[in-house]
Length: 155
Image (cartoon, rainbow, N blue to C red; front, side, top):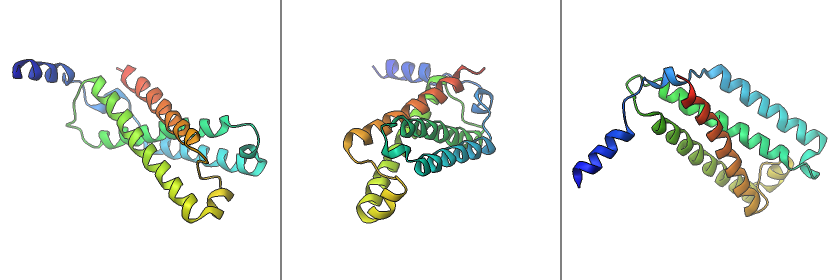
């Protein structure tokens, strides 16, 4: 039994080239993406897009955030040259990191809305209901899945 578990573990973690060769991510790419997100968020606030039926703007921002979070994870892995694992392991690690940060962000938004509601509503940094909160997390995961797919497809 232990032999089968060890064999499955080895199959999952077949050594691959270090993550740098899977997808080279630079901090400037993350900064540019975050700047685009901030600009889009400000534009949506100024034009009133959040108050209209244009709800997709929030989901676009969350998809972009999922990509940015995944890129941060890739930068972290790039700093550790000795990390070698199967592409599936890298993909799952990206998804896990994006999910962790997305949940932490939504908790932060909820606390912000509870304790500083004036600013949360003024800057549209809150989820008004559980459906929106879960939709935001799913959109973040979609961005992480997209980035993970692109990252592991690279040779």
